[in-house]
Image 1: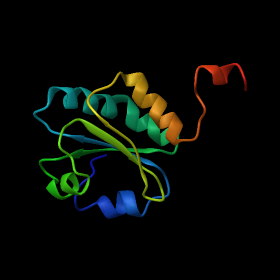
Image 2: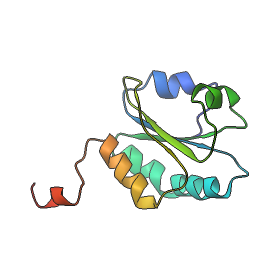
Image 3: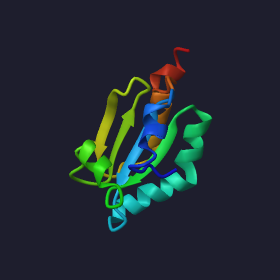
Length: 118
């Protein structure tokens, strides 16, 4: 789902789930890799785990880019239901990082050691 200056209120402010946002530019190669991952895997995975996964083109949505103080892309951040910001990160990470982050936002304990103690 695309986050825009116009639908921000609906997606973020009027939402009771955590929201994972990917700020990107269409001319950024690492951004294209991450947006493809979101389209193909993360968006569906997030919905299954009660985490909304969205992306925001900073060129088409300058107000949001300014509000979140985006200076470099890809920039990812999570917005919790109480509108607190968590897990801000710059740059492309391995895809497991994003799956683990969605699990964390969903309240799942998926650390290596948790498999032995549950």
